Image (cartoon, rainbow, N blue to C red; front, side):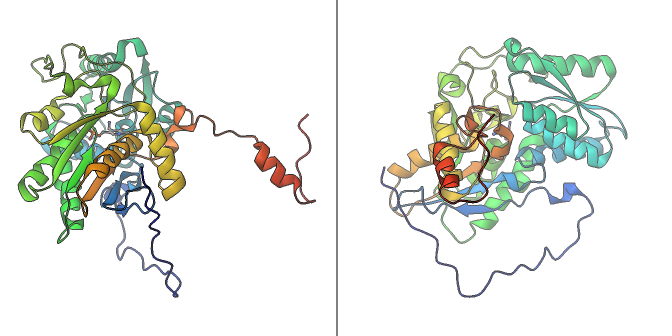
Length: 371
Ligand code: PMP
């Protein structure tokens, strides 16, 4: 692929200044949303313009902060959640971290069920934010953690957040993520919007807005190559509560944490039924890792594996897109959440031979030889 070394304009002669937010905040939860769309300056082919919507600017550093505040505040409004009542949810991590942040700020105890295959950082972050994390065996997959959360809710009378089925999910993306995109691209072109899915909240919610208000924008839905559930064409079996009754046969383990559980979520189903996507692209996990690293090293943009995977798909779209096209890719979370995963493989603690040679190239402050 031809790389466009189209550097951003040189700094102007005036030093940078900032002016503050112009307001004070009553709670951490009021800082959720309004994440920036940022231009890609080095990795994108020359004939297109690519932006990323950087969800790591949310207070708990992922897109799921939006969902967390929506679930809790909708349940407060409807009376489904009582003051001080325990909240329980099955989550691969970011929803749990978002819920832990919101529950801490609003005074609700939180219990999270999570398969033991997800990164250690996620468990520790939730516990640091005051949540309890109940691990489930990875062999039982997403269904296992989901059914465990249900069991605990039924037994204890806890509030089950139900991120995969709740109307509060797509609604918040319609009211915030989608609105932000419309506002930020006001008066400008947006030819492609690229997203993956975990619950499908981002896709279904943003889809509602773009289909109505920006029908010329093509929506690209992505999923892991080893878990191409939507592409398989096999419908998801569901129970009366819209939750999955069995795991999906097309699912196999994949490294894109936060994407594609082993069932097609009900929240995603809306976007599929309403044909909110123009193209479906599957992407291998290693491409997500590769592009996450490139975003960090060539753009200074630090996102997780799903962000890398979404960006990898955006680069495929970019290569074939007509000249002048404008593409927006979602970056759901921060790369800091993946230090113990394959994303950081090869990033070591000790000095490399090159770093060691640099150290020895001047006389002072050299490290003693290892014992
Ligand atoms: N990437 C990551 C890292 C996530 O945690 C999630 C949410 N599970 C997504 C992508 C997908 O977002 P959504 O649930 O809105 O489809």
